[in-house]
Length: 207
Ligand code: AP5
Image (spheres, helix red, strand yellow):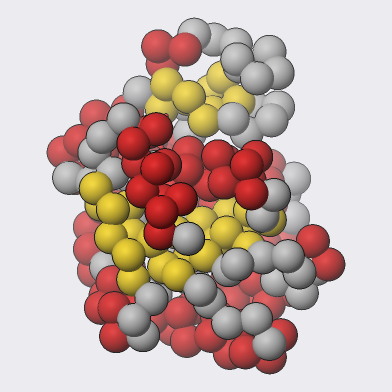
């Protein structure tokens, strides 16, 4: 099963992907996580991506497509993938179709997690992530990760100004993918402004 998780920043893509990984054993590929690791490790990709990420802009298509072409061919993707944060432009979506067709593993579903932008601004200002294991939580969870005890931190791009720019970028560059996947008859839209368990029940039903 190959799944694209679509949705604005903070819609809950990473939260739902983590559940699918633990219950369905699918391979989770988050371009945001890959890029943040590249920035942390100061790789060539990280040096090129950092400025865009800090500003809430998209990293150029060619960098992302090269990165994904390599990642999607790794053996751990054979049983299926959850793509979180990719594709984000029509160019990336067309490239993804090409990659999956070459592998003989077409996309099964594109799940849109739909949340109002003002809800998102509030969510992201209180999001915290674990430096050690990447678990996603909120400010209310405290300073230590519930899963591994690691340090919880706030992402550099989770300040209100950058979040609002990320939302504008989403509207302009990524929301056209909703029509793209609707046209391919692959789109399932889910109300993401509910308890995460209720959202997850609909995600499971969409598979
Ligand atoms: P990326 O890391 O992909 O960020 P994003 O898409 O902005 O998404 P987020 O990770 O912020 O949110 P999410 O939907 O996963 O929400 P989460 O589950 O954490 O990308 C970062 C940057 O990298 C981009 O800006 C860009 O520069 C670059 N980039 C990445 N991919 C790229 C690409 N393909 N092309 C070009 N550039 C790219 O949840 C958020 C919060 O809400 C958490 O605190 C969570 O606990 C809470 N929450 C989740 N669900 C619920 C719920 N149902 N109710 C209440 N709270 C909830």
